[in-house]
Amino acid sequence: MSCRNGASLKERIENKKKIVVKVGTSSITYDNGKLNLRFIDQLARQICDLMNRGIQVILVTSGAIGVGVPVLGFREKPAYLPYKQAAAAVGQGFLMNVYERIFHEYGRHVGQVLLTKGDSLNPKRYMYARGMMMALLELGVLPIINENDAVAADEIKIGDNDTLSAIVASIADADLLVILSDVDGLYDKNPSKYDDAKLLSEIPSFSRSLFQMAEGPGTARGTGGMYTKLLAAEICVHSGIDMIIAKSTVPSVLYRLMDGEAIGTFFRSEDVHPQMKKRKMIIGADLKGKLFVDEGCRDAVLHKGSSILPVGVTGADGDFQDGDIISVFCGDEELARGITHFSRKDVEKICGMHTSEMNAALGYEAPYDTVIHRDNLFVLH
Ligand code: GLU
Picture 1 (cartoon, rainbow, N blue to C red):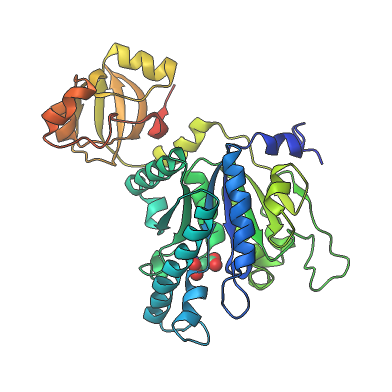
Picture 2 (cartoon, rainbow, N blue to C red):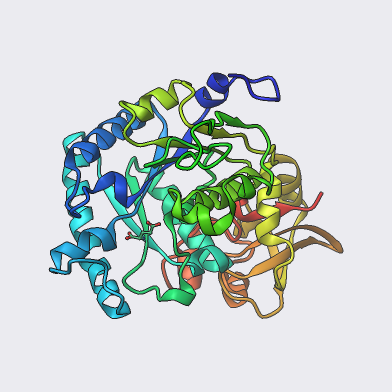
């Protein structure tokens, strides 16, 4: 199979360095709600082997509520929200305990990350979530992510882990999302209704008409959750992230996908410049202040893609806090916008200083050595 811009699927996949794998409740549990340990073991083995190959992996897993329900003695998912939250609290611990032990057998540590909607919408929380995920990956730990169902009530919920996995892929700057599911992929019509339905092996460019192909939200939700998978695909392709939907029961599915075998449906992403990804997050947000930098810093930011260090900062303006979006000036020229790690008060204490002098000036241990990290800096030129 070849992709539109010339690169074959195999070539595209071979270049992937950071991937998100999403597994659903139906893949990791049996119908009675008990864990499918055979599947989890095979998943862990493949993920650890990919990590040993040098690929960074993040696992997004469902199952907290599904696993917690029988543990608490409920026959089915309770409608009463506090019971559902209780099931999630119990099930999440249960799930992590199993993941921890199985991944450990293959030599990897795991880190539990529970997110809520606010982590993707609020720039400050986005920045902290991103920093934490990058750190786990850098330290060779497998982040295992779920929505924080024990605290998230309906109005603050992302609600489904297909969308969550796409958000995670975008927060972590992944280059591929693999959704392992109980469906083979996207069909041109509903395969449970039409015998001649054909599996689409590649979607070269995403269009909203695909939602119709999945027969609209109502039906699609009932047919293997294709609606939320298409929502995830939409987020991914517009963020420059390729996505695959494949059946979790295909033997060695991850190995084979990462070897470039055409399994399931491949959604080819748009070419999105890394700067444009940051643009979405940074441009349009309320600017809370200004940071002034010297010529040396200007040059490093514009020509070397550097972060902004305190030593290059000459002053600040406005009433901003850490996590706020501020603009960066050299004289009258606006160079960039980004998310600051320090409040104005603290910036004024450390401006012009070398990293080694920061702690004494701040009176606490500085959590970052940059005022704005280049990952969170959108250069305007
Ligand atoms: N976060 C939910 C859970 O762990 C699952 C949501 C979903 O399956 O999409 O139970």
